[in-house]
Length: 337
Figure (cartoon, helix red, strand yellow):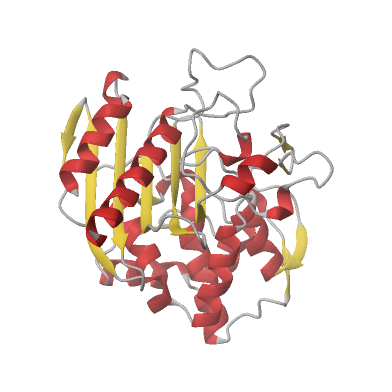
């Protein structure tokens, strides 16, 4: 599968972008959810590399993909009885060096988790990172990842407000392994909750572009079904917070082939997406985990992007997602022959 994934990365054309770094990992699963094959490809300086586990030596910034690590940390606290997901947490960032995390807030820990995962709220994330620091849980979480051979870290975050994410580190391989081994890190109930929230993640505009329906731009990505909570029942259009996509996607919903429980991340200089794909009932079978980190962020707009399009990053990522999905479908079909 390594050679096939490398060919996909080459074909999508990131190598034509000067300075582009793309770290991609895929774990193929059987129908029972067990891994049967995996691959990790790193594109850097126009060259394809095959990193040794746990992945790329110098990966791109994970952006909001780091919220997966935060969620695991908080759910482990809940499993140990140190916090109650239904309990209210008063977030007070007094003394913070800037206002990047927003002002004081009060919500249940479950509400912060929902906001952090489903619409990528940064203030909710700051609140939960601050909570982890208050419970002395950040260093043990980083140590847990290291003990499992995972190149994942929340190093450098600030106890005063939960901000300061620039030191966070993730590789595609370790992120994919985190999604594979998550049930070993948290309780069955906590993992079920996280999967539900990832399945309701609304920012489907990277490896998947399902929020855009059947528009000619951006290219179609992983053919996922969008969570109904974001779809206006009158117009059929997706709105996630202040992000209005403005396209009736109901026809695409009927044609969707997979669920995609995933988390995206986007900054000016980073674009990431990682999640678990399963075929919907009655649709062609494929089951896999995919993780992607890139240093081509929101500044990397396609030159042919229509004026006014809400697409926040390059459609190359959607083309990558669709090609990986087609590869995994083809591999499943070949295995059945």
